[in-house]
Length: 297
Image (cartoon, rainbow, N blue to C red; front, side, top):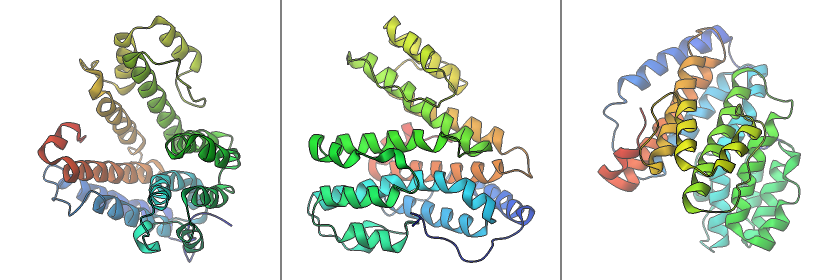
């Protein structure tokens, strides 16, 4: 059984969908300089999930198949959040645990009815198994090393697994960019805090052999320069701004992929910008004016 809800109907012709998305993208960009104040940090992400669901319904069968791994990946933080609440004994309802989620209702109920975090983690892995068989063994990690380690390993394994021969075109390119971003952040963090050699994920555009060579040099400044080159801008003076630099690198890629008005890059560009807007508004809700320093436009 798939993880995501299957839209009814066969969607719309691609030229019609792309025309609508180009118009929605113009609307999205027109108000990016004056974002509305969100009611809560979660509200922008709920709006993002609703927009993903709308676009998913409009797609034809082939594009639904192509974009399912990405939409699933974007659902993982919500799934992790639900497991965390269950682990903490919050006693929330299904609707509170999965607000506006694209996850199939049956899986939402199964996870929501779990008695503790370990049971919820096992249910979540069962739900994800069809999308990513590489998640086998994660339940043992949860029981042995705890929720935080489980969450990190879940995101890492899913990020790598969809690239194993399933992804085509810009969706595959986006996953490669996500792997690069994760590896560069991890390198910088481990260099800055003097931690042991980081686990670098395969499947990115930057060869792991080059990243391992960077690590052996033991120089954070060189890592920051490499990350800035990947993002297409000057190296940051402070490593703490690296996540913003890498987000801008993703945005540059979205813009490039979205230039052809008749290809799937328009879909990815639009959804990626919607995700970025949700990130920005959530930051604004959590941190107020201080959050503007980490916003990306």
